[in-house]
Image (cartoon, rainbow, N blue to C red; front, side):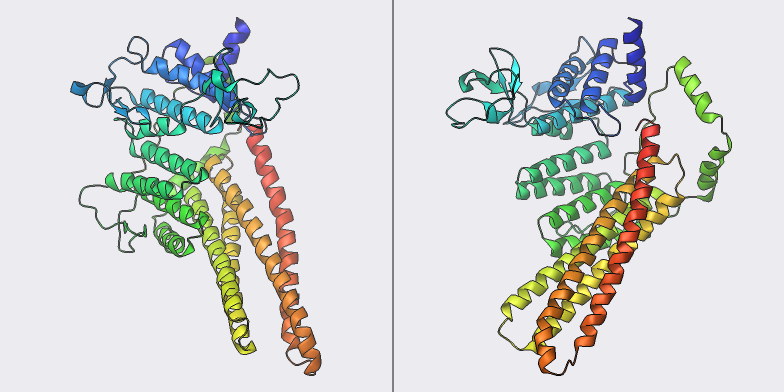
Length: 495
């Protein structure tokens, strides 16, 4: 009994639950989260099957008026519950509940959606109440089933199976139709649903969901704020003065969607408008910076904080921002700016390579003068993309180096951006080096027949990219050590 109580105290500090929930609901909440996130460092595999069952059990309790769902009511009281065809029951009106209760309910819905994504297509054998992946089911729809692992339960018959989990869209749409969630919660749900649709190959439907997310962000702007974003293109107007965090998030996500589907012409203007908007943000007030640095003076603070947490129950985390406000240019925001720069560099490099390949294919029978002009245009575009990527790496590295040791958000975002930027930088330089060597090999016979004229430029370019490759290798080694230290720092703090 003592071990059970101690375990729950530890889990409560890692996965805080709303204090007004019943004890049973809080225990289920901890069990669901520890199965979905077993290791703070992400090295252990999640048990999404058990997590999904726990989340569904918790949802039933939170929506049960006799347990934790007092004062919940349908959106339209006079019409009772609303059912969306193919998606089940729509959301409820939870505005009468406290903010911690709503935040916990939202986290439960999102957790159930993620569990459904990771168990998409799984079935439940009704004769044994066991869930199985679809590829092992024996039946007409699966004529060549895979064998189950050695020692596992025997494969089920299709006639005895029903879907093990509701579709993920059931929970996403429930969030979007619930009254009482704030703008950021609804926007995060819309973007997560859009990402899931993209993963399933439904790009057009995903784009509609990204547009819905942009509508959610725009609909929460103050009255009288207009012409912030061009709805058709998703580009932020350069004259806009009130650009909220949600608008930046929604437009950036839309640009990423376009880039993912090689619609670079649509993605690049959005990214550039986001970057312009971010660089116009107001800087963090100097007193906030001084306050964050003053925390380093007390060396006994971690020890006292640990002892206090063992004796006194920790308060529920404070309410996070709704995203409707204009953000400040904090270190974390600068890391996001570096991420946008990395995306711009990747698009410029990729579009130059693709367009030059198309020109080379169409002009393969034309003169060498036209080919050299195409190659020069390609190289200029690729160098521009390389320059953007290099600047993104420098900005991310400088920000993470100067960030406060307890600023986990900044360190995590900059670590991700730095890893992606260095990978892109290395790939770009390697491609440029290979292309230059191929061009040199193609020019060699012509150079030998024309007394070697023009060969010195090719040798110079090759040496340039070889030197750049050496610089990248050195930076990669330094970045690996830096990211390794960040991973150790995160592990020492328990995630």
